[in-house]
Image (cartoon, rainbow, N blue to C red; front, top):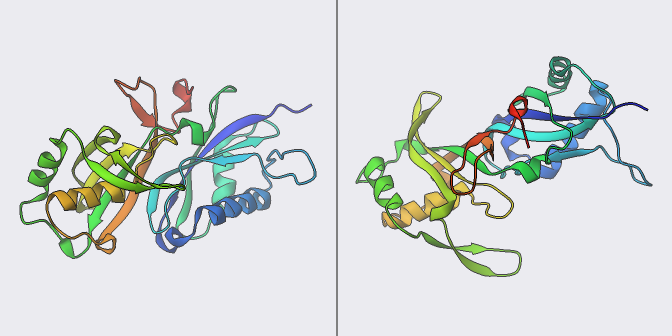
Length: 242
């Protein structure tokens, strides 16, 4: 009997593909694996499907430099060859960046997600009257940042402050922008737009999502504790992924 292995694939998504939803991305990679000839494992039963799971789904309209999926293969394989074969099947705007073997007892991609980083650029070089640095510092000084969040069952009020791990001025592709790292776990997922909108409310400026372009910088797992997190990219499996 062949020895199955777990593989974590990191990929980027840019351009027109940012308008493709999560379910279509899942089908896209299922076809890519099949066409590449990679010996992917399938579930058993009347309706077998590839053993594949994705990390935190990316919202429609967002680009990314750090998306992840886990897949099981029926036998050991060369990771450089896996990356090459998959990239041969990728459309323009999609690129496989790495493929690494996971420890046997590692958590799934979805269960491993702890945080995500985002670059947020504003069209037409928009900037608040007071300046970004001053606005962010004042925003982060707040003990609580209460916002309303719509769940499947009801509207609830949540505190964003504990979910914001980093918020500062940055640059992306040689353009000024904001960098934001927030909780992206299944238990406390926060979307970047919620934080930006709360910042605008603090500045008493109307917020329109169309003003901003958001790119996910990477997706992270936590190798530290809840009190003292140590966030590392999810493809660093060679350092003891748990």
